[in-house]
Image (cartoon, helix red, strand yellow):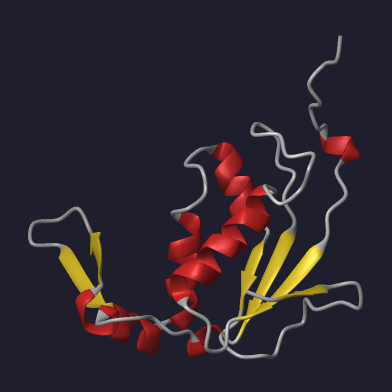
Length: 143
């Protein structure tokens, strides 16, 4: 009788992927990044073990969105004080902090638990193409 394969932390071999976000659509880019961080692209994927790879995103300031999302998409946060609701459009967020747009999109696609937080730490985002984390063994990922 065959048993189901379960990955173990010591058996996991991690790769490093580089993604160029220039002129890529935000949602499609975020889903691909989340899939790689989670490890669903590997045959040894195990839901309760972090088998994902590292991802480095460059040129985050040059992403695209379709439709009227630049004006219509609203990011909200609440300070906890009366009238502490703050709203910012996607256009304003890209002007203020372009890396945060990709960071939030990917984070909301990962599990909301300690495992998801560990997966999220393997993501590095840079607004331009100057990255110190790029190595010779990095794999260029096309989205």
